[in-house]
Amino acid sequence: MNKKLLLGLAASCVMGLSSTVWAADSGFGTPEEAKMMLEKAVAAVQADEAKALEMFNKGEGGFKEKDLYVFCGGPDGNFTAHPKLVGKSLKDLKDKT
Image 1 (tube, rainbow, N blue to C red):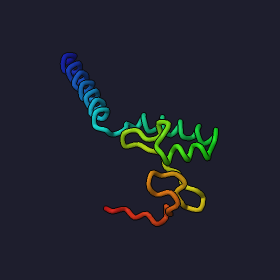
Image 2: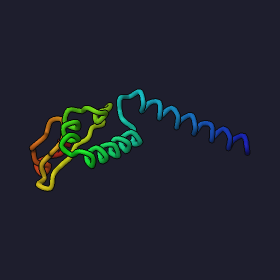
Image 3: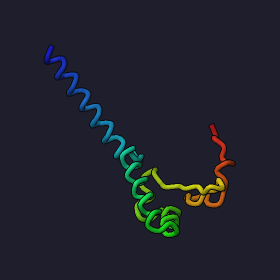
C-alpha cells in the first residue's frame, strides 16, 4: 500500500515538474510571472504614471516578457497603454471566436 502511494506521489511530482519546465520553455508566461508583472506595473504607475504608461507601450522595463504584457484602460473606455491599441475603445473589441 505504501509503495503504491509513494509511486503515485512520485509520478505526480514528475508530472508537475515537467509541466513547469514545459511552460518555461514554451514561450508562455506562468501565472506567477503574470502576477509579478502586475505588481511591478502597479508600483510603476504609483511612482510616475506618465513614465509607466510610456514603458508599458514600448515594452520596456520588463513589461513585455514572453507572451505577457501590460495594458491599461481609462475611465472613458479607451486604451491608455497597449502595444497596438492605444487610443482605441475597449468597448469596440470583438472576440474573433
